[in-house]
Amino acid sequence: MARTPLDRIRNIGITAHIDAGKTTTTERILYYTGKNHRIGEVHEGNTTTDYMEQERERGITITSAAVTAEWKDHRINVIDTPGHIDFNIEVNRSLRVLDGAVFIIEGVAGVQPQSETNWRLADRYNVPRIIFINKLDRTGADFYRAAATLTEKLGINWVTLQLPIGIEDTLKGVVDLVEMKALIWEGDELGAKYHDAPIPDDLKEKAAEYRQILLDTALSVDDAGMEEYFEKGDVSVETLKRAIKRGTIDGTFRPVFCGSAFKNKGVQPLLDAVIDYLPAPTDIAGIKVAYDEGMDETTQPDRRIIPANVDAPFSGLAFKIVNDKYGNLTFVRVYSGVLKSGDTVMNTTKGNKERIGRMFQMHADKREEIKEVTAGDIAAFVGLKDTGTGDTLADAADPVVLERMAFPVPVIDIS
Ligand code: GDP
Image (cartoon, rainbow, N blue to C red):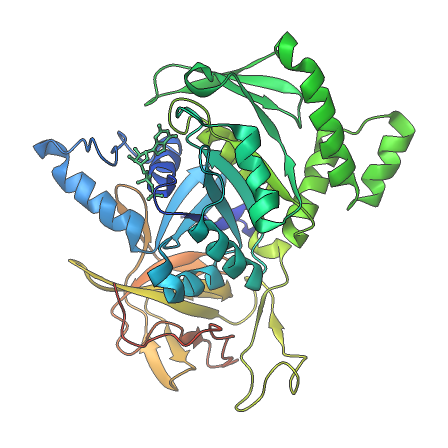
């Protein structure tokens, strides 16, 4: 298997208030990334006997920890972030290992209580976020009103990147404000495609107005882009995308996207946005090592940072253990270096050695055995004997202990 260059990896989470559509959106992502043969509706459930096994398998995969999808030459690892408030410790744990998140809110209710809780948690870890407004086909859904709750409830600086074309069941696509074109849906909800079209006449004025807001907001973080704008009266798509990515990563503003009728047809532009605006492992500073015994931010402010680098000694963090029919799977986020099956590493948290057995990447409908993992990636290891959630695995040549979760994490796994 060829190594995926680090700038083509995205480790993302999808977070939402319960019922806002996290499962459905994840299903659609897996469908459109071509790994699913068909979509499993959450409630209709295509659970004819033929599909039972596959459904069950996928159900496990999706909720298990991390599932890998390919989109436009990029590898997207979708890390499960539980939405329910009772799982805050687990939300913390998973937020720790992702580099960016898709934050789903609902088209009718907008920001809901769990959205607020999860938003604050993501703030604590400085997770770059893009916002996806879902269920816009439902009666009473209103993109603009739902977006307004981002200001009212979260008090954040957000900016619109898409406008919906039509309302509720007449929704037929979105206006893409970056490229100033319409994306119109075709086909049924299971195999929807989109095609480019001119912006509808009745939306032209509104689109121009919103694009101006987008330009003003995005270029505020990009001096070169601002100069280009003053010289030419506009900027190239590349410049605008660069500025949006910059602002998204540093959290200056949060881009907002819309789903479209029926049910998450907007997921393909959402995947494009994940690639365009959420960071690769190399776009962010890297992980810090843990505080020394008894130290904290005030007594040890300058901890060493481990940047994403394939050529550095190996380091990774075990973030979830899942017990399934294949045995104990330890999910590891790799921060630096390369690790091959058969290698021996240190569990630097516990001070013992672990031999790496088989390693897998989980896809929607299969698990792929891999022979090595590299910086930036996520994989499931089989056969680790004494590694718990939150433990660091590292090369004995540089036995670092990585920053632990901010909250106490129970050693007993809850999978
Ligand atoms: P989760 O709890 O956030 O994972 O939400 P689910 O994905 O399970 O969705 C909750 C319910 O909303 C399910 O019955 C879905 O079929 C439905 N749903 C999800 N997305 C949409 C959408 O875009 N439109 C409509 N009308 N229903 C949706």
